[in-house]
Image (cartoon, rainbow, N blue to C red):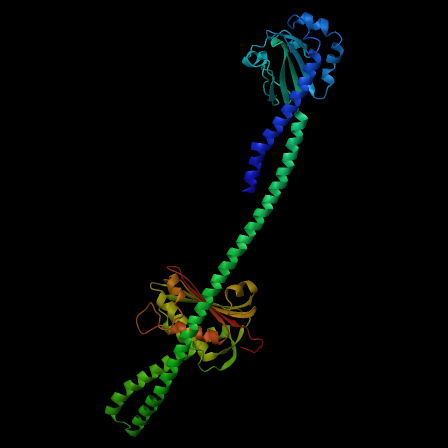
Length: 447
């Protein structure tokens, strides 16, 4: 707003006001010269003519000849009553007739007329001016009778150049200040927007963490209740079988109960894994060797038209983790990837040793900067929508058939129980990549 208003103020007010003052000043100077030169002419009984002017201005000719040496006064003319130029500091003008309307309707009626003429534009008489001038007409009157007129040109180029320079410098300072102000405002708004965005993201992450924590607490409570109930079911089934060994009728009814009880026990272990309450037996694991050793046991779950690829480093990447729980994680992720591929594709498993910096931690506050080992399971399957991706770790949430949905919840709980992070990137029709980050172990053992 300042950048727009102040230049407009210069154009609309400063320039016109300066031009008006300059015009009035040069008009007064022209009037003084005219009064001096006409002081001995108005006493004559005849009108102002060339021979009369030459006769009575003989003593003034030397002074008039010095007009060109005056810094401001660049031209002087005398007009007769009829408008003929009877004297001019530029001899080429002598004899010309001024038939312009302003001369006969304004000057000839005794009024002073002044106009600012810009460089390279035409004067009131149609002459192209080589400089910025104030062109002033002063009538010569005697008892209200018009005898002739003086035309005086004052050069104001220097004054206008000074004003232009001053306004130019002022405008540069103004634009500099305005640019600085706009920069400060832009930076402030950007930082404020960034702060608001970060605050919203932090609130969203906090709400998500609180939701997951509440669900984990609920899952842990349900798992413990399951275990308490199973403690009475499974031992009694075993006692029943031992009391009636070889009894087909007893085995016929006891076996389905035992199978269901085992499934319930597995379900309880998954719930406890999600609730971070499962048994935790950490040991040093070389993660790239772990992937190599575990893949053969899960390949029977992978459809024949799916290609399994691995990208494992030559140097061992060590983590401290529970081997059984990590096997559960890999199994769940491979099964999910397999089910997402319908007509052929690939599953790629990648292990890397990475350094996590502060920029990454800003968006993933669960981690601290340092050395980590990442395990990525990537597929080119059907992918997930953003809504599905946001709910993928919720227990019993599934886009598949009913009775599933604890696999990713267990993965989340196990990874968090190892002070790690699991990140899911997915787009519909473009596949899914699940990245697990685990703290790199400082101990080194042979694989």
